[in-house]
Length: 93
Image (tube, rainbow, N blue to C red; front, side, top):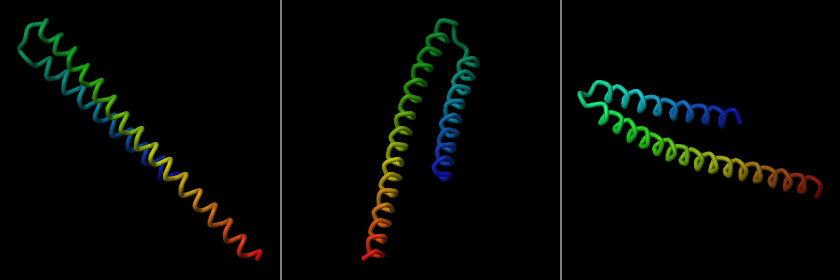
């Protein structure tokens, strides 16, 4: 379980880093660009919408990977239980 917790922590750190990097880059680009305020506001709106979509996509990918890891973990536990039951049956026979 410790390894799974570590993988989740790493994944969340990566997602946070990507999100913060995109946000900082977008804000810096918009603030430094020589455009009128209306264009800048429109660009900010589009950028935030894109960021929301990217975060949604990334969270879906993470959810899929976590579900896969949980299913794999369940299967490993089930296999070990079956193996232990088989060994216990062999020991009593």
